[in-house]
Amino acid sequence: MKALFDDRQWVHDPKHFMANGTVLPSPEQPRRIEVLKAGATAAGCSFETPEDAGIAPIAAVHTPEYLVFLQNIYTRWRRIEGAGEEVIPNIHPDSRSCGYPKSAVGQAGWHQADTACPISSGTWEAAYWSAQTAIAGADRLVAGERAVYALSRPPGHHAYADLAGGFCFLNNSAIAAERLAAAGRRPAILDVDVHHGNGTQGIFESRGDVLTVSIHADPERFYPFFWGYAQERGTGAGRGANLNLPLARGTGDDAYLETLDRALDRIRAFGADVLVVALGLDAYENDPLKGLAITTPGFARIGAAIAGLGLPALMVQEGGYLSEELGHNLTHFLTGYEGA
Image 1 (cartoon, rainbow, N blue to C red):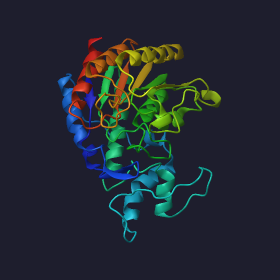
Image 2 (cartoon, helix red, strand yellow):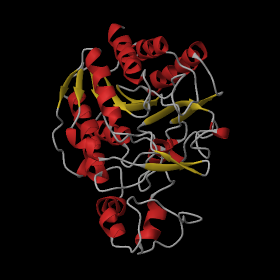
Image 3 (cartoon, rainbow, N blue to C red):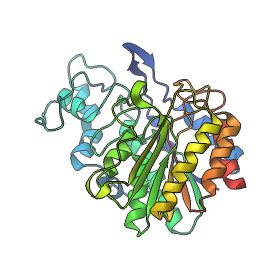
C-alpha cells in the first residue's frame, strides 16, 4: 500500500491540555509519528512525500477568516504581555451569532472550541502539511490507486469549518472528501475513531453529496459530549446523509463488528464510489483515553470488513494516542485490509 507523510508534521509539539480541571501533558505528541510510521512500514507500506497542492483545497472546506487566524494567532499572542507559550482560550461566545472580536484573546475563544487544541509556533506548518498529506492521498485515488494510507498529524476530525478542537485544526478527512467530490466522485467518510467526528459532521451536515458515518463511544458521558447522537441525521439537502452509531463504553470486537456492518450497509445504499476512512485507533482497549475495548486482532477484522466494500479507500490517520500497542494496531488494521 502507498503511504504518505511529510516531515514538517513533526514541528507541532503541544505541551498541555486541560481535562477534568487538571492541566495534563498532551497525549498528541510528535512521537506518535515514529510509532505510526513503524506500524505502517511493518504492514508493507512504502512512504512518499506529498506534493503541495496549495491553500485552495483547504479553503474549499475552511473559511478564509479561520485560515488567517491559524496562520497569525501565535505571533499575535506572543505580543500580549504575560501571555503563555501556547494559545489556549479562556473565554468563549455563548453562540456563533455573536460579534466577532479583534482581540487575539477573543478570537482564540471564537476559533478554539476547547483547551485540547493549543497553538504554538509550529502548529500551522504541521497542520498545513497534515492536510496536504490527505489531499495527496485523495489525488492518488483519482489517479487509480486502490488504497492509500495518509499519516496525517495533527489529526483533523474534530475541526469544523472555522473551529479547532480536540487536538484538531484542519479537517484532513473532510478536505480529502471534498477533493474527491470536486473530481466527480461520490465519497463516503467512515469514522472509526473512538470519538465522534463532530467537525466532519458539521462541515457536511447540510449536503447530500458526501455521506458521513461515525462509530464512536456514546457522547452522553464522553468527548465531544454535545454531538454524535443517533438522532443527528443531517439537515436540509443533507437529511439522511449523516449516520451516527454511538456505542456503550467498553464495547468489544464482536458488538463493534455488528455495528460496522450497519455502517457498511449505509455506505452501499448511498452508492459511494470512493471511501475515506477517518482512521482513529483509540478504540483500543488500553488506549490512554479509554472509551471502547477493541483488541489488536479486532483491528484486523475491522480492516478486513471495510475492504469488503470493494471501494478505493484513503485511510486518513486520526486518533490513537501513545501506548505500546499503537503501531501494532495500525499494522493489524492495514494487513487485515490488504489481506481481504
